[in-house]
Length: 217
Image 1 (tube, rainbow, N blue to C red):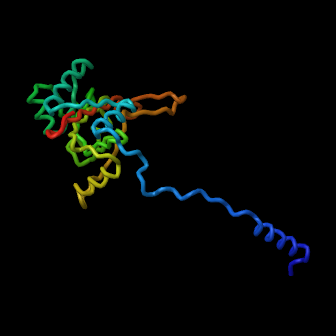
Image 2 (spheres, one colour):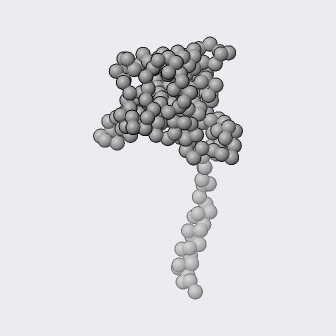
Image 3 (cartoon, rainbow, N blue to C red):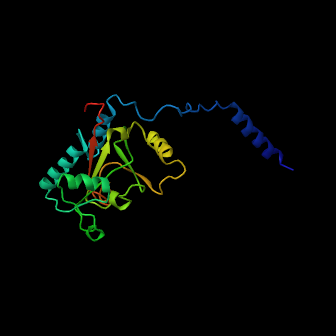
């Protein structure tokens, strides 16, 4: 049996609790609207702006041949003698434009730059979506000191969810074993809060964005 004084104390606390003002909960978050603002610029310009804001580089070109010409110029400026490529379509473009490249596994470690394609470009974040389904595989997205990506304007999507939905449509029940995002060059600020590029991946990320024939960049 509860002593009278203890019982009274319990009832007192209950009455005090009942007299308290109701708790004002914050309004329920908006789970429907996009977290990011709608792009006000064309998607290619939005992507370029976002990528350059995180130390990446985007060059808008009229054709894949112009993209390869830009690569050749960059190799001369950066004094790159070892461009590595596994993608046979890009290899054909490089050969047609007399741009030297390497593809032998023995030359992989010594590469100064690597060139690949991608799955999609996310305009609102400046991100590049890559997967293991491409000939370049996994290593080419993280190993080259300079990562060059050739993409088409048709691969631009506004938001990340659009890219994931497109991947689901593209591959259906056979999704690649690796789907990843590259958002700017590799970076870290773990040491004394000092930003370091290329800490655990490419120091430079360069996207060559090839226009669609029906648009003007």
